[in-house]
Amino acid sequence: MRRIDNPLITEGKNSKKHSTRGKSFGYQVLGFGSGGGPGPYDIAFLVIAGGASGGESIGGGGGAGGYRDSTQTVSPGGGAITITVGDGGAGVSAGTGNSGVDSSISGTELTTITSTGGGHGNQASGPAAGSGGSGGGASYSTGGAGSGNTPSTSPSQGNDGGVGVASNTAGGGGGAGAVGVNAPSTNNGGAGGAGTASSVPGDSGTRAGGGGGGVRSGPYTPGPGGSGGGGNGRGAGGGLPATSGSGNTGGGGGGAGYGPSSSGTSGSGGKGVIILSMPDGSYSGTTTGSPTVATDSGGTGQTLLTFTGTGSYTA
Image: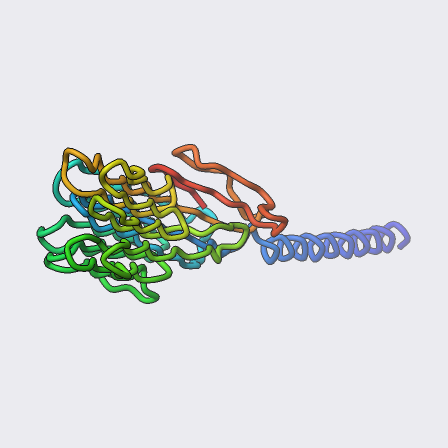
């Protein structure tokens, strides 16, 4: 009997232990699954297009590139985010300026964001200034200033350009934060519209200011560029040259003075920029295009990627 009972008891104990291991294993699997891998996270985007150049011959200031920001949610392994940064419009020694080039982000999980290049400044007695992210400034006796926020976005990506007065002055290009200023008198060109301060976590600075308007030769004062990278307008007859929009701000270029022989070249538009901001712990480290990477930017716990050219980020 002992030889029969003991094996039964031993088997029962072994069975009980086996059952306990089974429960323990099941619990561990459940715990691992519920913990999961890294979850979805938010990325804040700032997308600025290229600014436009100013016009020649009492030229209007160039409009700033469109300025758009957004926050979207991405998943690890959700695919690459494609980055396209637009160039600024080249300055001119005759005629109207050149508009800036669009910037955009796109990806499988994203709503595509496109910011429109700034509208060009025009010249005296020329056609209308260009419309775009922000509109170009207009010289006197022309088809008028360019419209900003074209095509329309909400919130607005930019503002209208200003207009010149009489036969001496031109208006400033529009900026992301304000309209281009109308020439205040027959002696002064209009200032470029102000840019907008960044609200992206970990980022700072004001960008996308409009270019200042040019003026005729004589005792006249050209318009200054708008805050955020806008270039200054020019006065002819030995006046200071028109300056270009600052690089990677989307600022508009300044308008030139009067006549090809004395005005020089209008200011070029500044190239655009795209900035991504995400939690330090979520940053995948997978990029192309060599963006500038700043971790814990400004002590915010955010990783900031600054793209000044085409590239990508993979979540």
